[in-house]
Figure 1: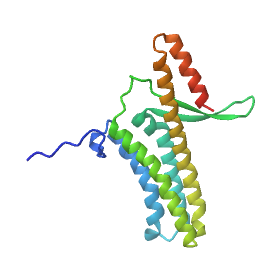
Figure 2: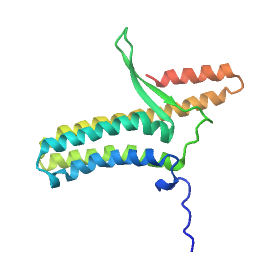
Figure 3: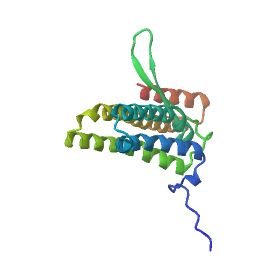
Figure 4: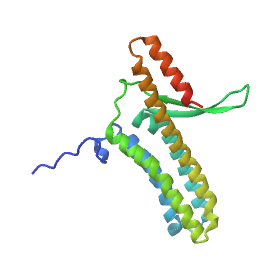
Length: 191
């Protein structure tokens, strides 16, 4: 008897266009939580748990920002500082429409993981406060800053991408008009 094939967009890594990227992304996302939650079962050294969790969070932040976001959903962001004024602003980049087909499974895994992890860290912050384990609050605060920064940046990057694609397609009759519209919308969202 044949197994039914999963539908596109199902949450099964076997349908991913980039399974190694997806599994590495999910591995970093889960590992920092697991070390934080279960580290005390294996060692009494709070400092070691703190350091390992911070390193996993930093690796997750870097991998998500620079690799997983680009490969799984075609989005990237970074922060630039204007050397003359010292002002910083976020810059968003998305793949050109039509050049990259976003796999629905990759997209679903990406967006679920990116929104769920900050919720877990908020819950862990509440647990730390309610159980009077204030020693863990700096670690949870760092985790929240890193995960929420990526969540907000990719959300804004996705909005930028959708607005740029809409503006570009509205003026697709002329290449120059589409380029101008895309750049105008891009500058609006880059601040």
